Amino acid sequence: MSAGSSDLQAEIERRLAPSEPDVEVLLAEVVPTGILRLFIDHPDGVTLALCERVSGLLTEYCDRYSLEVSSPGQDRPLTKPQHYSRYLGRHARVRLRESRDGHRSVTGELVGASDNDVTIAAQEGVVTIPYEQIARSNLVPGD
Image (tube, rainbow, N blue to C red; front, side, top):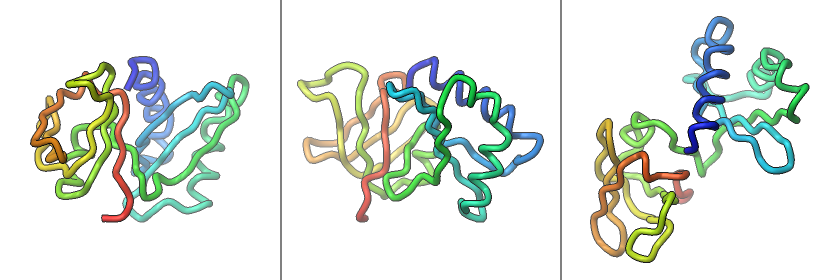
């Protein structure tokens, strides 16, 4: 996650908190086409009505971006240490900021997560990756 996207994510979380305190912003990213894409979650699930309420609370961003709000889907983004902990035993793909042993990504089972890093049992072996080395990661659908 780049500092810019995490700053934007934190700003959006602060704006939503008073009206929608149970909404978790999983990922806030600006894609090259000028779309501000938000993936949100809620303990009771994400409905179209919830996406519409969140969009309505973020109208000030519509001056700069086209806003797209959706549920995380099966390939849910993992952006916080607690996300990795919550999905231990599931498979994830982690894309790295810099190549490591000739690879830019690691895919495997999440077997450990701390406040500082995540451990993945990949085909190549067990790998521990500090969060600051992660560019982006998500669950792999199907398990």
